[in-house]
Amino acid sequence: TQLLEQSPQFLSIQEGENLTVYCNSSSVFSSLQWYRQEPGEGPVLLVTVVTGGEVKKLKRLTFQFGDARKDSSLHITAAQPGDTGLYLCAGASGNQFYFGTGTSLTVIP
Amino acid sequence: KAGVTQTPRYLIKTRGQQVTLSCSPISGHRSVSWYQQTPGQGLQFLFEYFSETQRNKGNFPGRFSGRQFSNSRSEMNVSTLELGDSALYLCASSLDGRLNYGYTFGSGTRLTVV
Image (cartoon, rainbow over all chains, first blue to last red; front, side, top):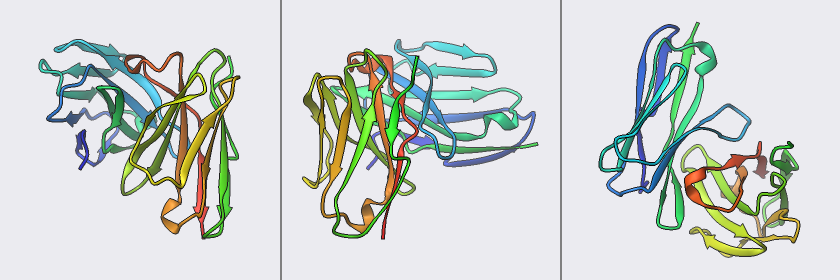
């Protein structure tokens, strides 16, 4: 059983479309992070959200932390082929760090 | 500054053998964590070392062990390899292990057990 469930698991869209990836849990997290991983490489940290209800923007990416700090979403506007990769959410609960199940995004030119 | 360096990048071993993987964290980072990544299970936490001490451990059998040296470099050892140990092993470093600040990952070691 995964502590953090992501949906959808796979997503294939055309360049220019918008998309949202969800990260859900029944547990409360003190912080939540989003990473992007490209094939053959390690995950790269995109953002950390700490406060319930917090919204952070990184160019075309918008990250939101749920009010109850149990869930988060990542919204990408006008997706580009360079956004292709595995998106992972990760959260700190207690003294451990948990990764989500991952969303594999493919943006078709 | 240099990133997290993992060696080797690729490794092929036979069942029953043992293997040692190496990780050099970012200079100044004292926390090193190890993860196993497989298509079916995703990223699974192995253990975390901070100042040469194992601070946290995941749910892996005793065949998986690690250590950290005084210069913060870390090694991970897997003994009596099984086919199911084939995976991408990732090392992640952070300044002091405070989870709110996130990790910097290495490129990983791809281990194939045949």
